Length: 629
Image (tube, rainbow, N blue to C red; front, side, top):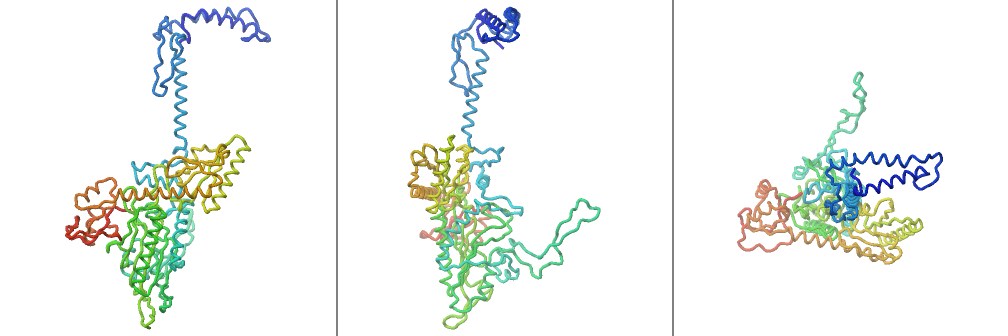
């Protein structure tokens, strides 16, 4: 390597080497006595070796293009990663490669340290952490990675089915907790009906069976049998197979919905007007053999509640369906902060076997609609199919009137698509499995660490005392950034940080999942301040939901405007003065993929002479059209 000093200083350097050598001969560089050391020869030998090396050094310098004359001082040229570093002092003569290398290494270490600091908590596939795909790059992948990162669902060994992990199932339990009391105030009682339904039951209501026939899973046998390995066939280890002798006399379908089995039972339970109204609900699973599945939104098996009621009059049954729809609106719009379009379905879109279907349609961030819940006025269709009559007060035999209604885990998918962001899951506080996470900070002082944990436990007890779902994360071996990152992805609405300084001040630092600056929460007043912060989170989500609905709702007056919306990145909900029929709907869907989501319950007057921009027929009603999940 080139020398670190100008060549003009070479004689002085040689003298120092000789002195060091002589000192070493006398007892080491510091003059300490050494056993067995021989003196007298080390100094001269060191000088001779150095003199012999000078010609070789001069040849190397010449080959490298370096001058024997010290050049003027220069400023070190650096890359962007080491900008701003000073050059060596002019007294050093030339810039040496050793100094430049050391400077670059130092700058590189600093850059690496800053980069590591900036990436603290970021997803790293090598660590098994799911990287969330940005919405703008790939919306479907974003949705799937948000669910995976929050550990809501896992794949099941059965095609089209999913495993709801504790965090995912807790959301469904919280939906139950919000809706079930509302249903009970209407006089609805919970019950349970069998999972397996005789095939003959479905055939009693023609429209009903036609709507579900292609989605039914069928049970045809009732047992398996062991299979013994064949001699000479080492590849076959034995197992089980369907016993051909166990074929059922009548096949069963795995419950796609329960109207048929419920009405079979109602036929036995209803005798007179005193037995009415009869209102039952069940929280169960159903199976519909879907070809294309998407977590929460569409799967072969899913969870839902389904209510079934019988009434003496048409008006009572229809009002029951509308009352339940109002409960769904309150749940989805007020509690879950979803942008909703309540309405009724067209004849083509209504439930198989219903006279009228009412719906709540949610609008996702990508501008597509999600059917989030339905309530059906069934008329007397099922009563006649299963011969369910009652004796009236006038002693006449009458068919009963019916309703059925349900929401499912699709609500969870709607919440994810409306509220979540590129950092992960975002949930309304009422749905979150954990509403508040408390993060005690690390301290090297064991006594102080114990005090921090004690304060965290006390804070947890205080918040649980007011009915909040709280978790204390005591993993002090993890850096704070990693824990912030994890709980954000899980959608916890509020984070409380508790460190030594916070403990001294009697406060904790709070951060809302919806964003904004950190703020202090008093440990003594946390039972009042934390619920207020969660209410702020809910209000923020509601405001964003309202803004989303306003931004992606469009009134369409011409076909050109309709086509332009289809070309947009976010199609949105299109309100159209509609004059078509079921055939026009089908044609429009085949051409564009757009479906008539509902006739909104709130209708503005149709201007006189208004023509439907899509069919050219006289407009009759405002209809909401959209691409949909």
